[in-house]
View: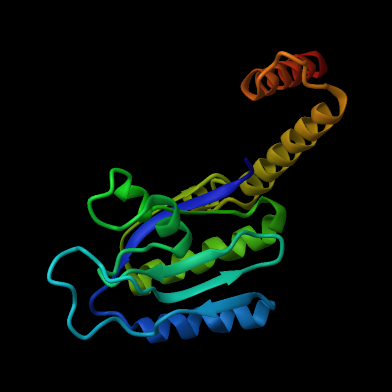
Amino acid sequence: MGLSIHYSGRFREDASLSRMIQDVKDVAKVNGWKYLIFEDSFPEDPPASDVPDDRFYGIAFTPDQCETIFLSFLSNRRMSSPVSLEAFGPASGHPDEKFIYMLSAKTQFAGVETHRLIIHLFRYLEKKYFEDFEMLDEGSYWETGDEKVLADTFKRYNELMDQFSGALDYIDQEEAEDADGYIERIVRWIHRRRRRNN
């Protein structure tokens, strides 16, 4: 739960992985973000099929109060991350294989400015290095480029998180109530309060 970005894509055959790593590293250093570099060049002999080897290529960085942004790829040049591979198993033949190539990061607690900067970085990288790239931005900034829309969306998410947190403090779980029932009761309570206040 929390405002996030979701993305997928492939590294272009004619682009330089080491150059992309350097570009991202420069942005991370300027902003004081931690970063981790994986392999800096793809294998000279690409895999004969879409089945990758077990190494990662690229870079990951972590802005303050943000989940790690993985700009990492498997040897088949598809975006993935160690977290995705761990969660969904080997990259071939697994029933949830498509999820290995779908990355997400929660940006809500990093704030509007950091979210905006991450989206601008992705725009630059998409043009220069990626193909078949898709981004779903829950802040709607990728789609609109509108800072007011982004700020309003962040405000709504923050208010909802505050309400949910307050409800957890105010409403106790009943003895015979399972977790799903408890959450549903909290959500109904929040909706009733919001309708009363509007």
